[in-house]
Image 1 (cartoon, chains in turn orange, brown):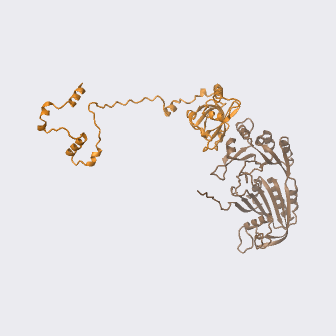
Image 2 (spheres, chains in turn orange, red; image 1 turned 120 degrees about the horizontal axis):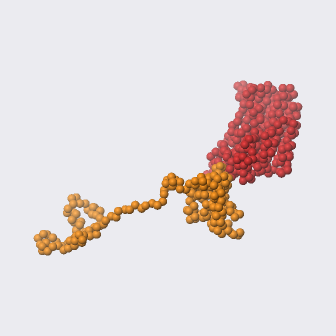
Image 3 (cartoon, chains in turn red, purple; image 1 turned 90 degrees about the vertical axis):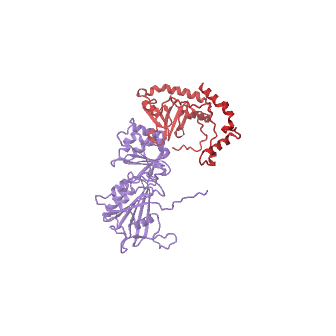
Length: 227
Length: 367
């Protein structure tokens, strides 16, 4: 209500006793545009007013009847853990009780079913089409063997992939050992349905979710298969 | 854009080590030098002043010394339990892969110490899965790797982890090669027959004998050498060891050094001072020679000199190794760059002293 009153006051015409005495008070109607008035006002009242400063005058008009109130910023609550918290809480670690090969054999069987459906395997399927589909396939549960590696210690490791991260496969071997094998500089071979796929780890270093949406350029021009 | 071709015009960095010592000296390394040079391709004996080889040396050369070539032998056979028990551990077994170049292909060798040395290419090494060292030559570009498998270890038996890993590695890569094989059983009674029968059933075996050749020289200029001085003399009374060695090489290659230096074909002349000798004999044996045979020849020549059977002032025994062997002496790595020479010469004097020349190529460790 007070705002309304103020508004009324702002836009009301001059009171009668002043408007009658206009000539005496020296008040004149504005006969020039508002900008020119402001400039001339400033020239008269500011010492050493330079003409170049005129250009710096911001021509923004404050509307006094609608005051701007800043909303207080509410912090958005993050629902995910950052990687330090993940590592502390060991979210992605597999506990020793669960590191048994026999537990994951059903997972592997499930994966075989999945890959059969995903690739739509028929005796006459085109291998290049299979390749393209295989690139987008999920490898969790696949039985994989390291057939070539720049580090000879990794060669020959066979197991079921339990986790796939950006750079690494976590594999469980038949001896119930959880091995972390870097993808880089290694060649992996996956066998299913009488077919063998060779995965060149150097080109596979990305998160599995990202890999599903990435377009691999075929034929690969720049990357080499030399380890 | 022009391409610049960088040509390396520097001479090959071959190495020659000359040492003099006496056979009777305890610290003399002549025995070690002969016995540790496992793979010998050619042996040549040069005796000036004789029309024929003295009797003991002749007897050694006449002894039959055959070796075998086994075709397409897979490496899994080399880790066969029976093979290791009967042949590797009993006696000295020398095996070298045949027709494989050390700079291009994979080379395999079994040393008499019971070690299997594999000098493999990078691709093979990455698939083999056995830990080895990169080659000591061309270290910046890791193209070749050397893997060593100790066959004589007690734990190297089927069922143990290391053995199974080696076996799986060989099966995965399916490595095979032709092998030169020579087996010297401990004790002189046994013959090398059993090793042939071990392989004969499954693989093609060839029995080869060493190729012998005799050359006789007449009216040959011999450089004068002083057994106690290797370097130049002040008065020009004898030749330096290097000059003598170069002359010996020329004689072995059949170059006529008697001609004057202005001859059209060859400008090489015998170093001064020199003496004329009426005859000289040069006997060579080429094949796959075991160090034991070289030692026998050396001892025979020494005994002949002692018994005055040969009137010459000195005798020269040169032994050449294989250009494609993975080792030169003992376990020193050998490679092929401009050449793959690894040879030694023993200059045997009448007073039981000797000069030993050891020559290796660029990709070799100095002996």
